[in-house]
Image 1 (cartoon, helix red, strand yellow):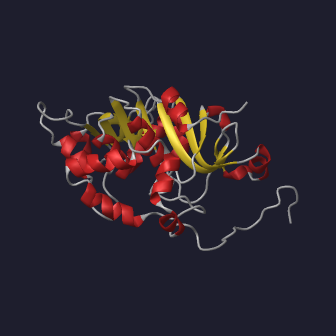
Image 2: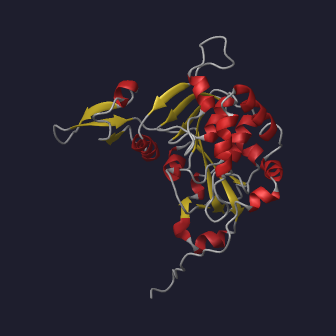
Image 3: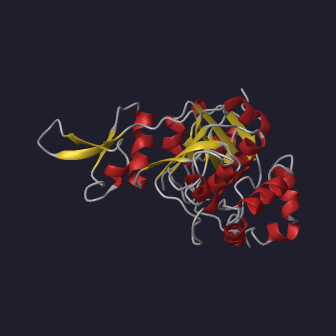
Length: 309
């Protein structure tokens, strides 16, 4: 049974007002296309979860889709801060365009532990990394617990179970069996923890391609609700083997996002002003896209799964 859908239909069906939404990916494979479609559909009151909120969550917060951010680090990688998020955090409780943004902060491992607990249907995840930090004071959900096997005390974080997780990948088949390679984050844990999963891919492949290289399958189709084929869907982040990170855009965003008016102008032109990712890509232009494509072939080794040599 095919699970292939358009981005518009996948977001309309799977993302609902008030949901907790996770768009994961660690500098690599970040699905900007899905975030932009959520903005275009005027979703509201979302809790956005992600280890490293960067430009896509800055854009979504600027557009007013979110009421809360659950995270472990935020910023414009290699450039500086996220100005739209800062404006929302510092916004007055009344009289502003949007209410102040709620924050719930953990360490990186704390967020990974939360997703792992959610994926494993566990009531909490224990970890040591909060000793000698102020995070337990800032976040009362980080709690000390005594080991049931001794006198030792550790910290625990609650499970994180997103209503929907959105993952970008290199390829999938029509049933949703999703393959990715290169730098990975906690996409697998976030997907298994979620109630609904949207996979966005650069390429739709036949089931035989997946079966020929099963070790690349990170997310099985049995947990996937929709497969969206969206080339360049991760731009300006990168997809190993398809296109590089658009570093110019990360630098440009710092200036664009410093003022609410210029941020809204960018959203009007590049998100609301296009029907979808195909128009966005056309607007980027062939010259810019060519500068991000790999310069040549770089195959990895071959494995024969039938014969050991």
